[in-house]
Length: 155
Image 1 (cartoon, helix red, strand yellow):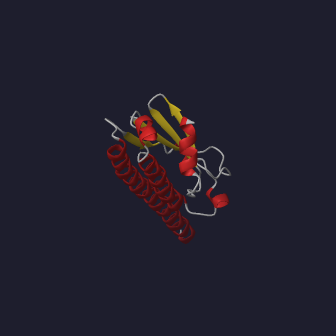
Image 2 (cartoon, helix red, strand yellow):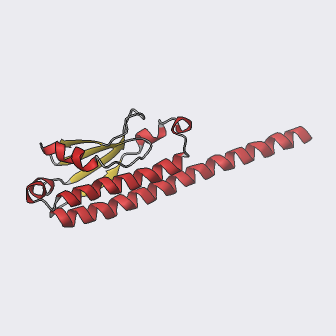
Image 3 (cartoon, helix red, strand yellow):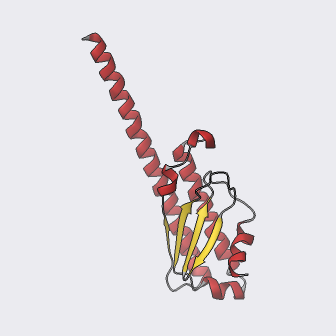
């Protein structure tokens, strides 16, 4: 009977930790999404977009090997929000140039996702009609190259 109580207690603690981790991840996602919403609003103002929505697709973040990345999943999700905010901020900065502004104003949607390959450091950009697809590096590392990579979409 005593062994059963110990096993049951350990199981409850284990499940509680799992639930806590899920909540941590959800809170990190909400924080990252809030950063993206704010950055998109600033880009919309800077670039003169009639409409601009930005959304995360979190699917790839559940596939990563967080031990290999050396960080907690919720930390990496938070870092992704900062990286996305930085990347969208580069878009707003590019709108200071009239030629880029004309093209960036046509974007109505930004779709953010994680790269399949965790070893690829830089964000990847692809324009699909009026949707700008941005694939972020899994570990959320920002880069000085983001502005140049974004410019390359139109060059």
